[in-house]
Length: 197
Image 1 (cartoon, rainbow, N blue to C red):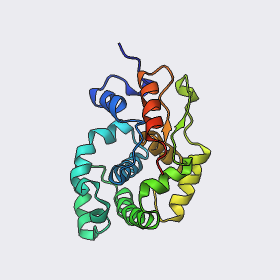
Image 2 (spheres, rainbow, N blue to C red):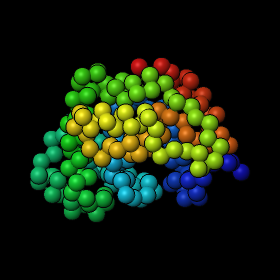
Image 3 (spheres, rainbow, N blue to C red):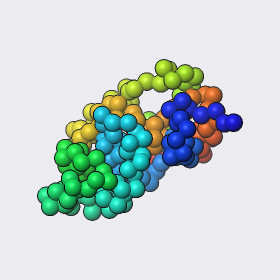
């Protein structure tokens, strides 16, 4: 029996996400864009709610191609508001479009979005050593700095807590508990990925 982080529970979808994806260092811009949009969509909701809708989000948002999402007009936004497969929140949908435009601006400035976003941790994964769920913070100085900078660049739904969830998902931090079987595996992946920049 494998020991996992407490939040994975026993939902097969959650377990698969925990075991294969969460905390693995991501350098692919489209995947980072997907994480950013999904973490923003999660605001006020549980992650499992978004995870269950992930395939619908990929369909609705053109597989998270920022070039396409950035061109969404009012008619497309209206259609998304009728799409029962996603969270039909006007502010979150408009935010995704604005974030796609800001994402492209950042990518154009830095060469890749990955180079920019990993810059908040000097291009390497922050390996934490939390032993209990209550040890894991909701935000950190790095996620606060990331949030501030993203907002200045025109992003929304990127508060410090959302940014920290994004950092955890994208492997910018390794927040698997030390007793979790993935902790050492992800730590090794992070070492192999360094430096990101």
